[in-house]
Image (cartoon, rainbow, N blue to C red; front, side):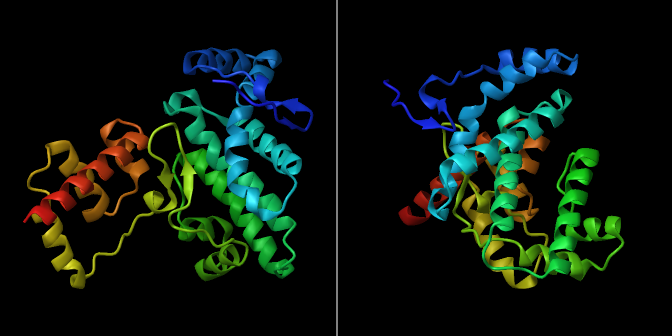
Length: 260
């Protein structure tokens, strides 16, 4: 397939290299041993990742060159902080960091101004959030962030809400060549209200014809309220695989219901 030449920040994107997972692993080992050339290869070999991320911000009216440069900062931060021992794909780790860097840039350049005190609390909360993620390898709750900062939980929630842009639940976060992963796929619900028991009963009845793995995934997702990433870590597959299995199982259940 012919690649069209697009130049961003003086970079001919049609000539950007693509690294295999094995090549990246070897380069990470070299980089962590102090090889600066390996780090440069990792940056150049993942610029296409930055390009794929900035496409979702095309409607913001920002210069593509600016977004690309900011995205590259997020890429370099993710390369410097990536831990091979976590046994996850680099793209899974890097994409949220690149998005976060671009969102911070857009917030700083947002014409709608948030008070300085709220911004200070929000930025400190973001720093504490990254610190806790690096420490525990999981997403901290607002309550955990507030406790680490020594401020009321409500202050952190209000400050973070004030600097957030509205996002559609069906906005794609990442696409690894298969089914896209949406914002809604990352959401979990810890509530277990009595008025949902009818829906849960219907769901259980519809799961009868599914295989054991499909049942387990739907049970963890919709009865235990876990995210796709949490389910993937528990059963030892990728989040993309969990997403595909979940969608296939729901599709099969819908088909059975219409046949009744």
